Length: 438
Image (spheres, rainbow, N blue to C red):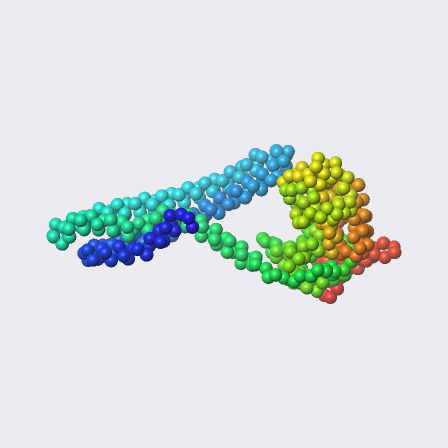
């Protein structure tokens, strides 16, 4: 928007004015100007057509190279520790060579188009001067008009030349605009959504299916089930059975689904996320903390409520650990919490999940990085949440954690294969159909 191409667009309306003056000076000059304008416009359109594909390919290749490199830099410690640098560098070089080759081809085509355009412009100057001289010799044009015709013709064709020279930037801007438009079409602006100051935590799944890109079969397939408010639901099963996907669907963050997830009878997609956020606690399998202080991460970067932060930290048993940090609750944890150990990050994320005692809490492998003390604190936390009537979904494999559940769901291959209910003797189970009423 700030380049020369935009200025050329404002110059384009003046082109007919210059051509009209050429006609007024002599009809031959006017027809010559129209002919060269049409020719140069066709040349600009053809050069743009020939270079657009190469420019778009170069832009895509550049993005792929940058994304690949950024992903590897985020895991530099693993790469260095296991000597993977050479192998990954060779793969990066393949992407980089593709980017360089595509960029070189695009530059070559753009250079050829610019050189041809310059040749045509210089030819035009010579030819219109020759035509003006011939008309001056015949006495049909003055010498001043001959010079003026060259100036007018140059001004008439200048916008086309500017557009050709800025074509690369135009193609890149068009590609970026197209990407943004597709993104906004896939994820349109949400309506204000349902808001409520009170959430019970009752979850109903109606024909819920979940999908992933580049995968033909669904991850979850037509699940029907109902979970009452205040229950602790254990979810277990082999790796790849869809446990984490189900956990994400329960709080409405899995992008590709069909069917419905109802929270208190209302589709979770219809809730206002800003209003619903304080009522949901989520501990993902891959812990994500954010640059800031310990207190800011616990309170989700909202208004700092010291009492609620302290309650959450003491609930999960990390209060003493936080006090041992250099600045206590004000200690910066660095980008992604890199200044903390794996267990500390896990327990800090757990404190964030239960901050403010949300009504619906989803814990995905919450004991993955915990020691015995951390696991004991986790067990106590789940029991306390159960006492105050919070709905808790617990994805786990450990029996002592699953024993805390009121009901146990066993998942296998896109479906819920078995549901168990606790009784005095332990856990009893029965197989169910996930396609019928449950």
